[in-house]
Image 1 (spheres, rainbow, N blue to C red):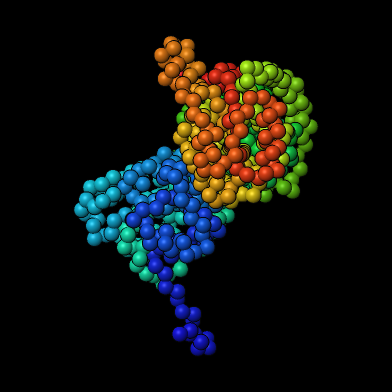
Image 2 (cartoon, helix red, strand yellow):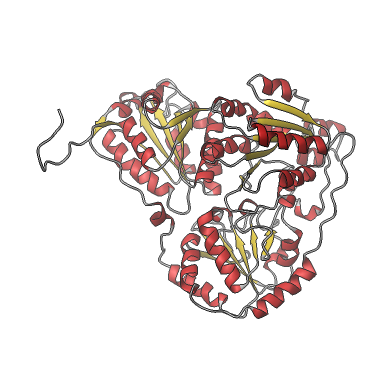
Length: 572
């Protein structure tokens, strides 16, 4: 019976543990959760089926993790994965590590046997007699906890979400025993202020901000170098405003392409692996006085294999999150919150003037000296199309608002070289750890949140990993365009092994798969492509049909690379 006594406090709502989790997810503005069902999480999925949240059942836990990753990147919210413990949780490990390394906030809920079975070897258990999920996830997340009651679930879930959304973003994990999903509570989820968490000031922020502000107002020749955590519309406003006010050229990491329109007069493209020749030539010269990096860890790919010229005859100042790799030989790292530092610099300089004449003159000089035209991509021959041409055609045929998800493999190079991203938050790639097939699931995950056209640029090796996940997109009516660069090989490995012997080359070859038969089995449109005109026509058809479409494109095993120095590994 309703409580209608005047002035009486409203009755508290009673929630099960499962309902509490879902209410928290709804509160965060999340529309989808991803995962694989199993007895350990039955109560959670049953409750989800009666909620406003759409539950996406994937083909495998790893793909569920990648899909939640793509959803998080595209939405700038939390990605949520629900799985059983034991084998389910273990299958998720690479996706969790990818999110950790690439700073993507995920919430992983893994079910487990009831508390009454916590100290015995139950079926598919995640305890010390099973897969020891506690130890595994403590090592690869920002926070992992096994809860033993609904009260502990309430406090731990609120804590976990805050940790995931506090920079540096990353994955968090809760092990929830079966019985805890069914226990009840009258507590309500605590509200979350995204911006308050994101723009937290650290103890050293004032020092960092003042140091960088002095450089902005100095006569030093500066370059901004922006990392992928900042590839979003909100922070792009600060970066563009500061760059234009102080006339500072902007380079990005591979995954931050588009943080400033790559056709903007101050953009010099991405630096590092698959970077622009302009940024490479300028970064490795003695022209800049100071390169200021925001969320630019000095890993192999970002630093062009720790090229010694990057650290010579100039100052490299890196505002990176605590825990990022640093060292005396790799620039001057300031451990701070780059989000806060950029926002504060924008606020402090908005109403101040600066004479940009000298920097304009310097940038005009270096543009003439170092911004050389890349060699032309050769014509396509023998029924194959150069992957660089595919990127150029996509750029000309698709609308500017399209979102590109780039997979791992040799084809990644050509997205870096030839795709000029016009907007922030329109270009995504797991470029640091680079798991094969990531983009196939992540691109679909992104499409669950975004209405813009989504293109997934992948390879035949990646398709072998997670091509089956396209049936999830069909089931949920999420049209994406999938471009397969099909060279019948693990491209970069094949290039190395083919120089050794025929036997070695065969190890890196991929047995031909009939992708048309494969995709038709779950209702996708598939077209085998052998020339550029046909590719352009099918891209246009996708725009009209708005159906999931797969373009299987024959590409050469040894594609044209205009600058091999931008495609080398540090050791292989």
